Every structure is written in structure tokens, then in C-alpha cells.
Image (cartoon, one colour):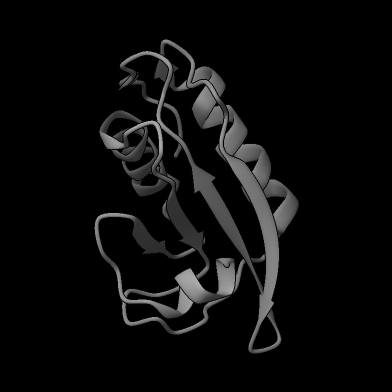
Length: 116
């Protein structure tokens, strides 16, 4: 299922982002969490370019940790349920698929001077 969604074009439920723009990840995570209905799932693929090219991620564990920190520390209230992260291999490179669900409460980004 994840690979099928990855192969699909970007739409209201699929976004692709490179490894080095976690501020954009946060915006996407918050937007998905607030706009999904209970029966919908959205996907953020980190390490994929806008045209679908595989860029890869340098450190999949760090990416997953950053996603968790975004949900716990950079959203108010903290995002629950927390998204599910899965490391995939494509074109010999690792990418991270973030499976998003509807937030239990409306959440927003905390504006902070952190180095995202």
C-alpha cells in the first residue's frame, strides 16, 4: 500500500518532501492532522522530491525522531494519535513514509526560534 501511494501523484492525501526541510514537514503534518476525517489516512514521504525522484534520507532514525518531536513538542496540543513512520527502500536509497491520521483535537504549530 505505501509503495502504491508513493508511486501516485501528489494530491490531498500525499505529499513529498526532501530530507532537509523539517519546517515544511511540520506544516504538512499539522495540515493533514486537522483536515482528515476519521476514516482517512494521508502520507508524507520524506526523501522524495516534488517530481517523485528518490532523494533519500541521510539518517532515517533521526528523521523519525524529528517527526516525533514535531508531534510532541512543536504542536499544541501535542498531536495524537502520533503518526506511524516506516522506513522504505527505493532506488537503493532509504526514505521515510509518515502515515498520518486525524488529530483527536485541533492542533496548531508552535512558533519557536528552534533550528528546524
